[in-house]
Image (cartoon, rainbow, N blue to C red; front, side, top):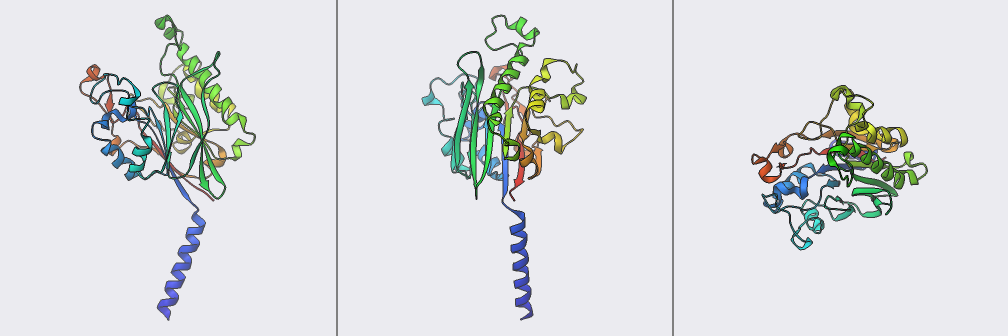
Length: 320
């Protein structure tokens, strides 16, 4: 009888603890460099094993398109030869995700969201067809987490170059830092087309993540650059004009957390205050499969890296 009462008490305690924890959601973001070029010749087996080990509920992939023939920098020609992005549903199923969505695409560097939970596209953001262009495209997706809970995801991959978009004199354009100003116009437009359209978004669950190709003034203790440079325009805009919180900066105040093999932090996860309150852990990943390395052949294969030239970001939040 005493043992039975003990077992009942333990079960009640576990039930109470479980109900108090809420649903845990793990999110993984990563720029996977040319559709995981490094592992496509291996049928993505190492990539799938890594994702399985991390066991995320939601993944956001940048550069989610096959662009080059395996082990070369020779471009694939025609969508019939590209496994990604057209087969993300098949690849995602291998690591346990039933849903896959092409979120942002304008050229060969799209973003894809995969999930254990149902997905829907709200908007693909590519520009206004006139004076605004979002070079790689961006997207706004919603994840149905159940019981009336939704996560809004805005995917970002801005213009990567120092020169401006379609600049005729690229050298002069780069010297004038027109690429920085173009990126700033992209992020302003993306925010205006997504989170700014929803009153009270700060009280909802929003995530904006991706490869911003821009450094932040919060990291200038590390860069020690002139604070007036246009290099900081992108993140200065986000910080001044949206409710977003820089997740990694908040979790590692005063520390510099690189996101690329080159040593810069240009990949960010921004969350609204409502989501930030639920986050229990957040970190860039640097070890194991994601311990980045340059391909020893250098320019012969376009200077590509293994398995990417960017580090992933992993964070977890718990729904109440």
